[in-house]
Image 1 (cartoon, rainbow, N blue to C red):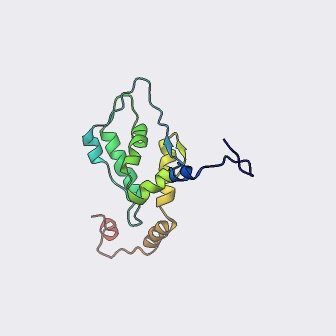
Image 2 (image 1 turned 45 degrees about the vertical axis):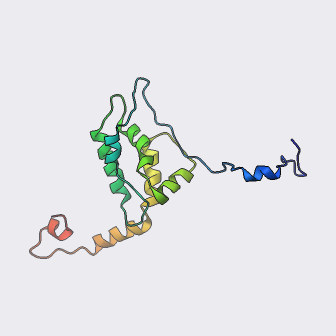
Image 3 (image 1 turned 45 degrees about the horizontal axis):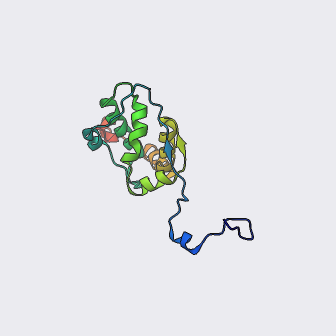
Length: 152
């Protein structure tokens, strides 16, 4: 191969017409037991929550719903955390999926994945609005706490 003046490989014009993979790749290394038979049935896939990355959606709720699906559909010799690691990418759509694919990280635990997701999608603004709601909370004289907070 010919080199240019900077010592790099000189590319032909036709080389520029071919796509080149130059983006980071996110990898998941879930620790599976040797005798684990990891197969997800289609009914489990249909139960998965979907997260698009919209600011109005609660990422904690998404994680909780994914956890529930994994807990009730346990597979012999496969922990719920491994199931979450394997299934989590399938729950993402649109900008959330784009974000995840472009991370370029290697995840070896569910905790790492969950923290990264919550760091991205649980914004300071959401924390501020929750604090504000707690500061401004008022309870009427005849209301129970649950009625006033809206949990009836």
